Image (cartoon, rainbow, N blue to C red):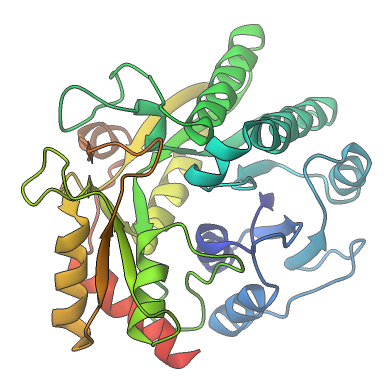
Length: 341
């Protein structure tokens, strides 16, 4: 089975590549490397002991092609050459703050790029896709924990683009019920591979909490800015459902095996069901790593919500999946990746 992984050099994508290769799938990774490094795929190669191939016409098990989902011609060439059976779609811009400041950029890249991908898939009769969505589609959810039936009211442009892409996929299925679609709503992925060869390493200023904490712990940054301590939470800082990236990986593999059985569209939360505040994460990281995290309270960021954590019941029912790692594991593995790199 030939699987195209868009955005496969990124944090989550690279970890999913490991498990796909270990499971015997042949994968073609495309990434424009705008916020990722090719070194992550070299790390994947070390873990699985399979050479990374750069020949776009090769029939190798693990091929990388630098390409952008917004460009039709390279995508069509890939589908024609490799006879793609399924797509796992991670590619997209992901900064909440940047999306609020530059919404047009996010709609152009995330939405238009995805629609371009779907059109090429349809042209080449590839109708199996797993889409990397986000818990941001829920916005300020009234009830916690959040289940898949909650109202979708995203508060920022990033979340709105994810909802728009979800709607496009559902519309595809409504027009053609031969599609096999899984929409996976991630909560807050952190952690790293146990080997330390791959982890989260953004090229630009980190927008996610853990890579920022790690940079403060390694003294690359002087302090962590905590955006808001006046939320309606147990300590005033924002509460999120942090999930180990390896748990997300297992969710993808199980989702792929589920949707190929029959045409369908499923929407599934991937989270632990436990909410931790920013300060909870900081204190746990300090405890696990013995590193002091200097922080400063700053004002709230536009588009942020007070609480967001999942009800993972449906994932257990439909995918036989549940998270295995705790916050201590996530903090330890994140720091271990930094120490080894």
